[in-house]
Each structure stands twice: as C-alpha cells, then as structure tokens.
Image 1 (cartoon, rainbow, N blue to C red):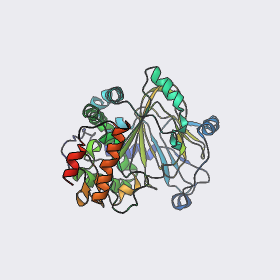
Image 2: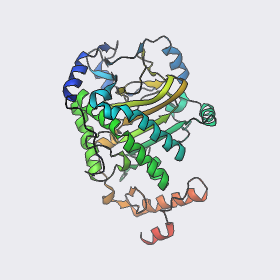
Image 3: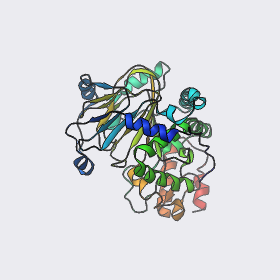
Image 4: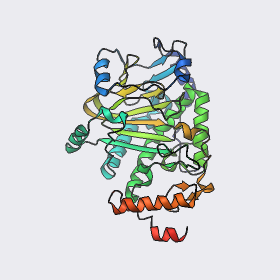
Length: 377
C-alpha cells in the first residue's frame, strides 16, 4: 500500500465508546418497509420533483439527534451519528479540523472552480442554474466535483472496459491538481473517522469495501483518493451550496452504504426521505450513513448561509472485483490514467481528445503530444 497517508491517532477507548453510543441510540421503525422486498425488489424510479419533496417535508418531524432508522424487521437503513468525530479523535485533532477542511475547500473552489451541475441529471434538479449563477455573482462557491475511481457512464459492461480516475482529477492542471491533493489531505481525518464508524455499524460490508480500496491502493489506482490505511470508499462527491433532487444512487452497491459529512453554517438544507416522512437536520461533526441505492432521498432548499457537503461512495461495478481490468493488461495511455482494450480504442481516445481541444471544449493539458504518442503506438 502507498506510504503517503498518515492516519490520525484514534482514541484508545474508541471501540468501547462507539459500542456504548450505538447501544444507546434510539431506533425508529419505518412503517411498511421490509428488508427483503427492499433489497431484492426492482429499483423503481420516482417522478417526484424537488419542489414536491420540499412541500411534503414541511409536515415531517425533524430528526436532529443520533437515530437509527430500521425496516420493520429490524434491518438498519439510516444512521445519524451526532458529533461522531469527537468519539474518534482527541480535541487536539477535532478542534481545528472543520476550519481546516473549510479552508481547503475554499482554496480548491477559488483555484479550480466547481462545475455547473448537468441539467439532464435528476439529482441536479434541486438547484436551478440561475440560482447557482446568482450565488457565484455574490462571490459564493456553487457547483459540484466528482472525485472517484469508476467506469465511464454506460460503458462498464463493454468488453475490455476499464475503470479510471474521474475527469475532475485527471483533467486538472498542475496547480489545480495540487489543490485537489491538498483538499484530500486536509479532509483525511474525516474519511478515517467515517471508516472507523463504518466498521462498527456494518463490519462485513466494511470489509468488502476496505478490501476493494486496499487492492486499488496497492495497485496505485486511487490517486488523491488514498487517504487512510483504513479507507473504504473509492469516490467522493463534493457539493457546494446546492441542494439535490429526489433520487436513488442506482450505480452504488445496492445493499451498501454512502456516508455524508457537512461543513459550513446554514439554515435549511435538510436531508429528506420523502417516501418515508423522514427529515434530518445534519450538522458539522455528524456522520450520516444511508443505504442510498435503496432509499429515495434529496436535499431541501438551503435558505441562507453556506453548506459544503461531502458524500463518500463506491460504485457497485468497482467493488467486485476491483482489478478485473487492470490497465497493465490492456493498452495504457502514457499521458493519463486510462487504459484501453485495443490499439484502436487507444487511438480513438487520442483522436477524441485532440478534436475536443481543437473545438475549444477541452483545455490542453501539456501531456498529450498526439503526434509523439502515435509514433509509439
């Protein structure tokens, strides 16, 4: 495993205190929800809009304290863990941690501005583009980043398809790339704490995620995503001041978990589960674990202030097995973190990049000298 990550020292009594906290957390049964039909049934889509969910949620009770939501037969599907990092780490680490993470996010957004969310993605229908433009005009950061190891959308089943680092990592210019790595380094104790809690709430699922993460790390396939020897998640979505429309994370591990932490100071922005009358008021220092591939969820309107959301996930087609398509078994591009199943596909990759640069859709990265690359093919 790479030696670049240095884990923060965890409290000696973490395991005991975490067990005590989990045993004392109230459990709320979600009426009408049974584990077998939920986990084995079809992934039904919803036509519910962000506006519909927001209106419905006005009548929902708000959950603010640590709570475990379960199916009627006792299977946990949501954990809200209040002040979870204080159980993991000493005040020497936690006192300045949140300010450090906010500062690193601000530096990232200033030097490598976030993308405008895509209109055709249902998850992005919670925040209108006009609202994002308005926030940016006021000097606030607004948009999203996707940092992950994954397959291109719709291509994971193609013969010889290869997973790779997302474009928000590999397309960054050198100074922007440094900001990405700085952000992940500053945020590393949060990821480490999340994984310590993940191991507590679901040891067997954590072990599957951790094994995948470790294999990718040992093969040097995680880039900045490698943060901790105890890591588990191979992707992180960073949402800056945007809410999210109702959706299920259909590409994630179906019975797995995503973990979310928040930074900032805001009102509104509740996490809503509109089909189950659940509204959660998560705050900095809390960890929210959700079976996000199974439960319809969204983020309500952010009424004021600023809200930075970090969601950790792993795609299902990465989890098993993570290295079924190693780049070194295919045709790697010498200039980026991509591999291809044939010379033809590698050449097409260069041709598409070259065309995008000529059309002004992509900035030259200084690495792809297409004439020289073709000579070596």
